[in-house]
Length: 291
Image (cartoon, rainbow, N blue to C red; front, side, top):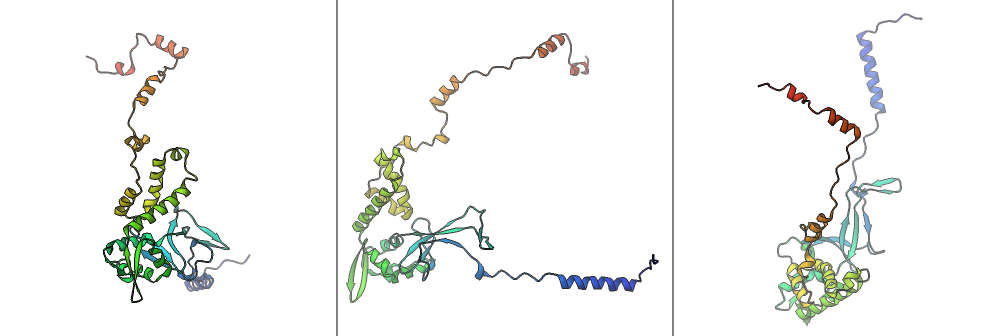
């Protein structure tokens, strides 16, 4: 066995440099920066409607702000569904963002009504009606150039042609009748799966349907439509939340009927200990301060 030789400091330095050089050569290449063009989202929409459509931000009648998808044939509200703990596998890759975006059909008349109400006293060009005064939702102007939307507005507004220019003015009676038609259509759909207790009470059913219908209306317009549809407010007893109710007479009666709690029977050993302990003092009394 050959004798061991001590390395010089120079040899140690050279060896360390060689190791560092090897590690540098074998170090994996730096991962590429994330490319936003590869970001993917899960979208649920009607087949064949995605091309030639764009996403715009508009003032929602009730929510204040919402995203919509606009095209020549479609107008949808974009609803994001996410429980915060979801990803998707796609092929051999993972889509980290597990949010599902639903493109839900939305009647553009509901979006335009607040603007039509502001100019309801006179006939005005649609470009002058669909203007956001606070300049927060400039995309509202895009609806003025959509022929399908302009045709839909004729259901709630009077239209006058003046020198090949269409002028619009809100017709309140037409609007309320249009609201009633939409309400009845929604009612027919919801009552298919409604509980028997709702079907047996027409007033309760109307309130149930209107709770959904009012999500498309501003608070002021909701009151007006509610009055037109003759939606009755519930009686006081229907508004009671049983989960938050204080103890009622039924609760008190139930407590009175509850059987008394029986004391557990003492074992024979426990009784013997009690007999043996008669006439004795506790340890704390023994060590206590004497008078």
